[in-house]
Image 1 (cartoon, rainbow, N blue to C red):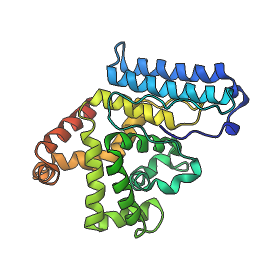
Image 2 (spheres, helix red, strand yellow):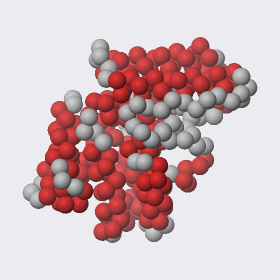
Image 3 (cartoon, rainbow, N blue to C red):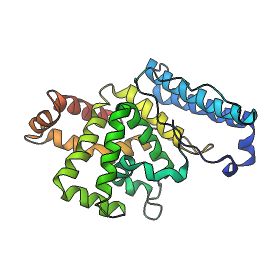
Image 4 (cartoon, rainbow, N blue to C red):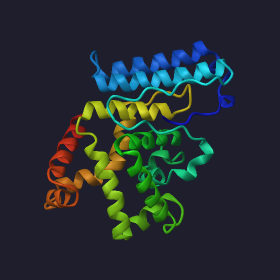
Length: 260
C-alpha cells in the first residue's frame, strides 16, 4: 500500500514484534478515537486491511523472507492499493511529484514550525491508486511525466510552469477535481485518506490525524473549492467534468468547512 523505511533504520525496540504490533494497535485505537464510538464499515475495512498488511510484513521478517499471500483488498474501492516501491524509486511517482508541488510549504523544515514528513506524500499516491483504475492511473502518470519533462525542477518552477500552460493546468485541475469528488462520502473517505497517510509513515512515527488531514486537503483542493463558489464556476465544472460535478464539489467543500 505504501513504502516503509528499511528495517535497518528502525530503533532496536522496533525490531521486536511485540513493540511493532503495539504501534499497529495504537494506530487502530487512534482511529477509533478520531472517528468516535462507531466506525463506518469502509473505514474499518481499510484499517483492518492496513493492519493485516503490516502484521504480514512482521511475520515475513520472522520467517526469514518466506512467501505470504497478497493482502486483502479494501471493500471501498475495486482497485488494489498501490504496490510497494523502494524509496529510491521516486522517479516513477510522476503524478505524485506534480500534485506534491502544492504541498511544498507543508514539508518546509526551515519556515514551517510543524513540518509534515515527506514520506506521508506516498499515502496520497496510494489514495490516488484507489480512486483511479489501474489503466487510468498509468496513463495519467505517463502524462505527468511528459509534463514534468518541460517544467524544470523545484516545486515553485514546476507549479508556475503548469499554471502558465493551459493544457498543463487543465490536466492538474482534472486530477484534483477527481480527488475532490472522491470525498462525496466524506467521513469514509477521510478515514481512508488518513489511514493511507499513516501507512506511508516510518514505523514508530507519531500518527497523523485530523490536523494533518485538513492541512493537506486545504493545500490540494482550496482552488477547486473556490472555483465551485465563484460566479460561473459551477457551470464550468459541470461543462468540463459532467453534470452535478459542481454540486458534489460544493457539498464536499461544505463538509470540509464544517469539519472542525
